[in-house]
Image 1 (cartoon, rainbow, N blue to C red):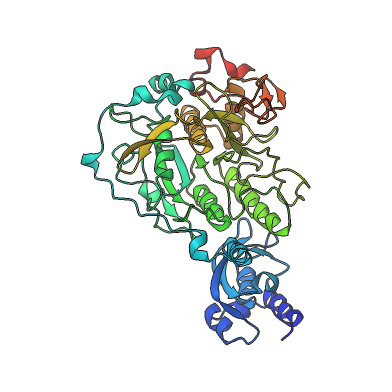
Image 2 (image 1 turned 90 degrees about the vertical axis):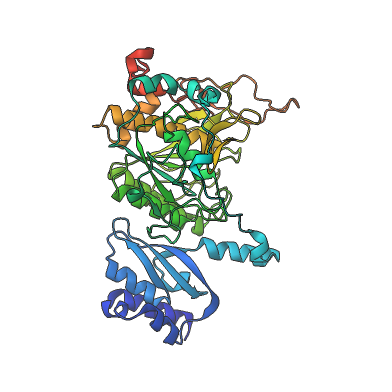
Length: 476
């Protein structure tokens, strides 16, 4: 059958609900128009808004695929297919596979998939009795930098507030996190659909992020920004370190349905380093992510995200349904509207050399550290120091959680506006020559109150819970 004939068949199935009433696997296997290439890939598929689940499933079945889940609220599906032409067969819906994209790059470069992304070593299970119990709060310069130590005297956070840690999984047995972690609201999203497989298996990343937000205030180890709130482990980063679009969409949708007040996304969506060049495939990823963020925001969830460690200038990602700009780099989800994008500063309150930046993208900044003075937090088995915007972002998520605790009536946009208003402004540096070679390592644009390096400034935990205690920055 010609490609035109196959496309017609898929289009017909979109209007004949019976096409979706048979087993998708059996239909694909028996249909001579399907051409499986031996490798099943996972796709995210964007349909016209208002498309019913029956219609979406019929299109996917007609395109030689199997539906994993359909999110009718945003008209986005996750599907699998072994057919090399699946993305064409489901048109006019738009489909993209991060797995297939990586495989194509590997094949073009002559690199075998096994060598391209080696699996990480499994983490040793945490034995709570062996976790060091010494008080290390004095080493948490980052908490003092944002006034979190003083804020905790006034507000430790409410158990009614849940922060979704969209990451690589949180260690459920770490003694600094067991009280905060809510297993019932935790889920794995690697397949694109929520399930109960969410433990940290190969990466300490999610556990470190979780500790910055909500490590217990118990006189042992470290203490988070908001030790009284609950956290949910939502696994969107797989065991090879990838955060694929379907996993990120699932994480955002799960957070919304679970009515989480805040989410933290210390990752950028793969398979590209950053979207510094734009094409239709990147448009699909931008569209599904934008829809998921829009829905989560409308459902009452504030989304906080790291600006990435690529040290590049960012531009805002286009709104849903709007064409992407021709130039500039986009970070997903950080560059999306309604997301609080966070850059990283050192202990000296200077933009970290690795931190990406961009006027109109960065909302606020927070401590992420530099080499030699990284951020101390929880990891499976104990504590460790890590640097990055991944560490800066959860400081802001923790402050937002404190604010949501102190002001339970605030919605996500009000939380975002107040975070911006209460931040301590940091002006652009007069000289940003980190290497001392006589040239600027990055260019900061804007003014003291709002610029590309620091946004509105350094996030302020104390102001979030007691604005008048430090001069009522909220009045600015």
